[in-house]
Length: 66
Picture 1 (spheres, rainbow, N blue to C red):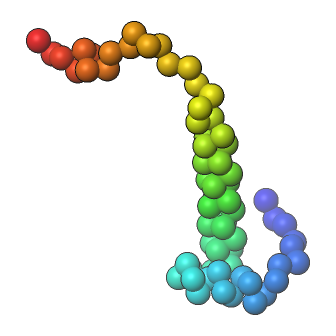
Picture 2: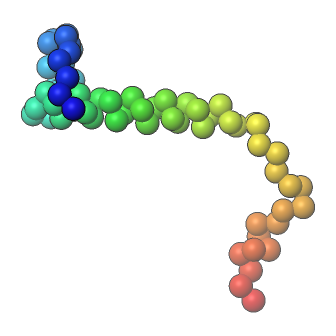
């Protein structure tokens, strides 16, 4: 998808240098991937303490292969 964006050139160059990426396109794509991953991780962290586990569940019993 072709897109025209007004991006801060200094910020883009800094991101390229930090990441060691040569092209602007690759830098923007990497930044977007990392942004999405971070937001998804935050959503998962929000679930901590929200999941009810079965008190009778015995994971050690499932490991027994005898």
